[in-house]
Image (cartoon, rainbow, N blue to C red; front, side, top):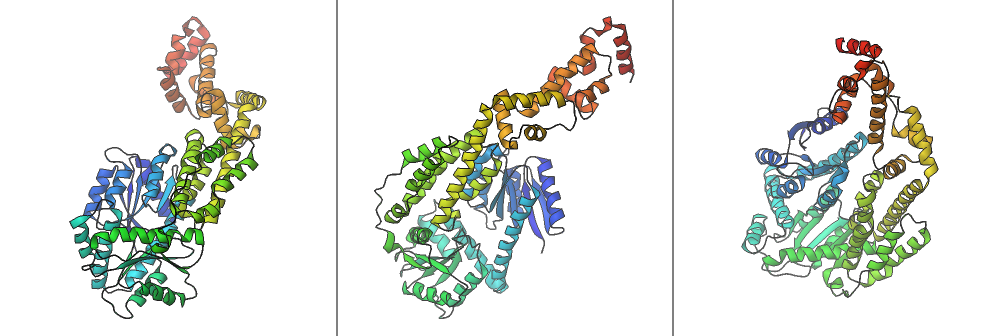
Length: 534
């Protein structure tokens, strides 16, 4: 099956580069469409159906965040992958929390792109399998109702008459007789089932066993099964039915009983909150909102301890950090308080430790940013222990990274050795930062950050400046032709040399030589004339 793929980026080379990589990995699988900004993309989305949309975050006219928000209001919504540069990391986090399927950093690595599309294809295939169980007419009706449910759940502001109208369109005509909402997920997936076909079909079978017209089945915005049931006891029976399949380990969170349509979103929020407690329980079964609604909320977030952990990064106080982390993420306290205690602590850890560190070191800490993509959202982890170990791992990696940078900053001898090595090798056209970092035995990322801190400029800026200084010396004091000067100071070719020189000095190398008063030297004047004739 060929899918429609919309690539949205204001840089043409990015758009074409993504297509080239995907065509090599998945020949003939996608039809490619392109847009330079969010507004142009939205026009195409309104005219045709797309399976997948990849979008940059920062674009003119309409940015990616706004575009993703507008996409949620469409009848046919593509799955969304965002692409972003390191400078846009804060925006990327917003998009991650907005429900996008994946996130890729620029420059895009082929293996990461392949991994992303492999996961997308698996999810889309599962959704196709579900749709294959239904007749075309039923499928169209089911899709229409499902889209209405997505709209209801994705739009926070919807309420009153509009909510009632949308519920009617979703097939929930009469909720006044009372109802309970249940949210169901596979135990190990923790809400990331992407509409898992087996679970969906088992629920579908159960709800149609007795053909109760007042029971309904949807997927929520995270791919979990959402059931609307008149009798709360039916959720227990559903759990028993699903338990007959030994390969299915399920968790159900249920709301209190409601008797008004306008309470639908409240009921959904209750079911979701009940389901969240499986994050702490790490088990299967049914948790009712009535069981957890009275948990105390009179807690205080250990802000001071969290700030201390952030301050200790890179200081060599690893044991103190681990001790403080165990206090902050005390499992016994998590069980005692409302789940919002855990959620607010997670937010505080992100803001007071990781975000603060990324503001200083983010551009260099590319690999660490990738880990944060997983840990930055609490419920990306299946269970509390997974989250704890994830935070611990991320802290250790950030600690080692910062410690390495500080060590590089303090080690003046190695930096002087690096500068001497650069002075001796700048004239090599293949000379790069990796050679220098290897020479002084520093990690590439650490050295890049340390060099910038030490010199006040990046390595690429420094080497360009050094080469230009050497080039001007040769232009003033030697008889070498311009292309010979270019080669002697390490430029790949004379064309690039001329371009860089003109950008830096405002004139060409020949004009610089002329302005330097070389006409007083007859020998050099002959060479100059030869250069001009060539």
